[in-house]
Image 1 (cartoon, rainbow, N blue to C red):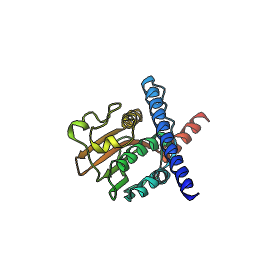
Image 2: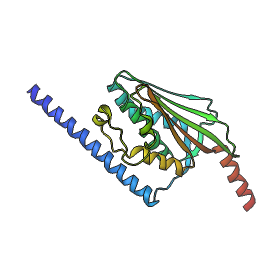
Image 3: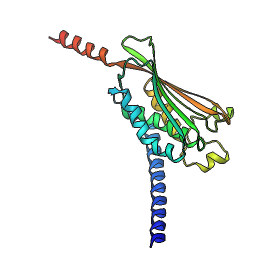
Image 4: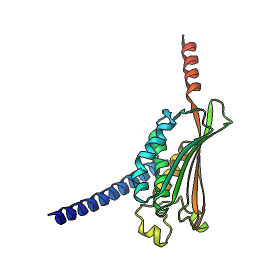
Length: 219
């Protein structure tokens, strides 16, 4: 009986994994289609930065644990924790990058996620930098040139064995561009990869002052 239960559990797990992969593929294709049609909208709301980090940790923790990796998440020089952005889309971008870091880092490896704040040239804004670094397999210089193209996947034994659509980073770059930011990558084969996402984000305090000034003018 126990052997039969184990067998059923095994196949249920396989079905779940396959369905999750299929769902991911469908969502990526739909997102890419929306981006190409210009129908992806950025919905700006007040966002608490620690909430984004908490969500990332919650979602990828199981994958990190299964590969016995070390995950470090921290902040550096962050003064303004509340900013104006699209939490759903920003989390989508960071989750894609972080999930890739976990997938392409071997068992026992390390993934570092850091949020830092820099001075912004625009009034009422701050520059937030999201960094995701790993000590995984890295990428060749040749592949890095086409990394953000749709369906791009480097041809090697580990990437071929790893599930993915090759659309995630293309979607991420498009979203970040629509938010007025930038994304860049530095990678060395056999040593690891680092992604940097930079966004100029409105400050909540400035938003409140602007609303008060508008109300005063209307009165």
